[in-house]
Image 1 (cartoon, one colour):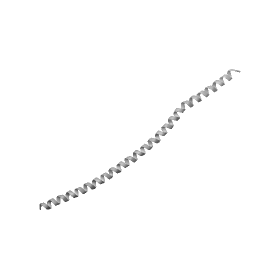
Image 2: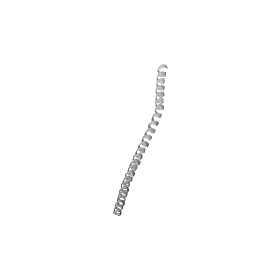
Image 3: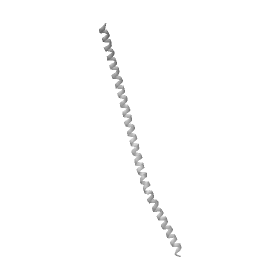
Image 4: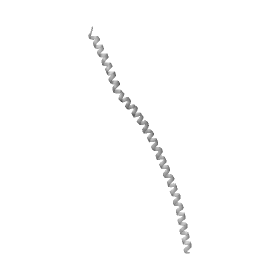
Length: 91
């Protein structure tokens, strides 16, 4: 009787060990899937950040050139006005 009880308990332990390994394996696979998805998401995010950084750099160069262009255009207009004023004053 005691032997049957011990055999039953050991069979229960074997079954529980098998169930634990199965659940653990399934959980490990799910964890790996989540990590893979996170890596892919991070890669997409990094790609978008790189693109936006390039766009910001281009816009910054355009903005840096804008004051120079405005100053040149203003100087050209002032020169034209001065030339016109000089030509109207001489006659």
